[in-house]
Image (cartoon, rainbow, N blue to C red):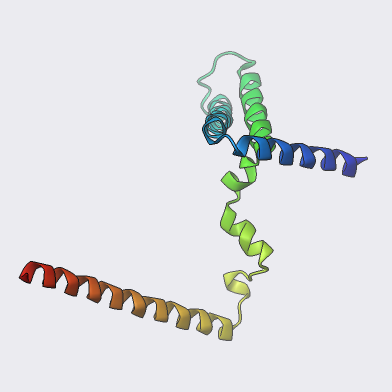
Length: 139
């Protein structure tokens, strides 16, 4: 039963994301609204519980409602995971990359060698750009 529910909402999210991704302006508006609505709820709920700015004893209800509405919209459009987890974490998980503290010394030294090569290439590019600038000023 639980798998059927998860499967249904997964398919629904795929459909909505597929439809709305073809309309980038609408996607931006809906996504922006959802993010603001979510953080509005978080902000007001924090104020209610920690700062007591809200005198209304049921003020937390609108905050929870905002969090739920914002979350549902972000979940249905595929923004929730990309905003809060991040694409790089997802991609590293798909590639089965190790975390920094899980790497062996050999893997870390190989990474360091790659970074040194990239740094050298960048230094060469910077020198070439400087030389081009000097040639243009001499002309």
